[in-house]
Image (cartoon, rainbow, N blue to C red):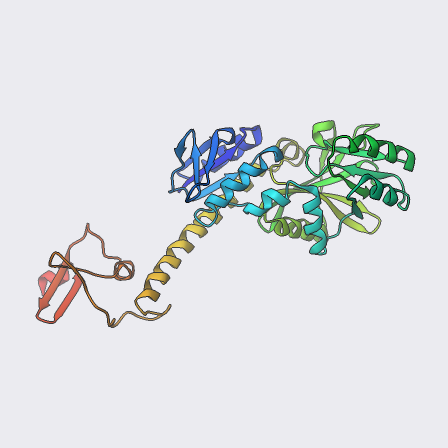
Length: 365
């Protein structure tokens, strides 16, 4: 089988590509920055100006939130044609904290209390009513970037005045006291394949590895695993990272990452996360390919009036005769497994035709 990884070429992406090469016959490494999507007529994905091959069995698209529009366009163009672990909608909702929060809330997945205000005036009214400290976030951003903390109304109000000049929306979220520790879980399919606790540096509230946090392997309880998998499923991602805080009311989801770094969690847990992802992609791509063949055969059978499970005994149809040659329905080839490399015995007379595979026993008779 043939696969491709479209990414920005990070170390994590290279690890996944190397792991995929153990199972797939061919794995192409495609630079996201050199991709174009032609939206005139049929959607076409172009790499270095040339159309990407149609014979891929799996395409894994991943990258920074800054490339969200092109990743969604790529996914939209290929979705349903090849196996891809992330749905088109996920690239929009998964890279926007506001949309992520809305999806989680709609599906009753536990998360910190969050507010979104339409104006600075409305936001300040929220700030007057909530308990401190609080967290303020930009909708986009990863690795802890765009996350700010305020321990009073005065500091929050000052931050808001500064943020208003940027003319960007932002979230106001209750602060969950965890002693500077959060949990990152890697979800692959219906499982959490690895999890670690991340602890922030002294004086730093964010526990992200990229801002100096340290990771330590941990085992999640069944409920935490369940909500992590559900959160990924709600967003539409079969491969992603889910960040969790342990509140006094239980675990809450704070963020999802569709293109997580693997170095930190691999080092902390000693789990080959890249291999887990690669094995899953191969399994799903194989299932997708086989399912597609079955669907094609079923469609052809339906077109000639045969229901699934029916044995082929007799078909009433007209014949397609071209240049004095009889062309049989494609479903006949699919069901009989006839191929041009083998020999067949054909018996024919007026109004009758029989074709069967030629074998030694037939020759003796």
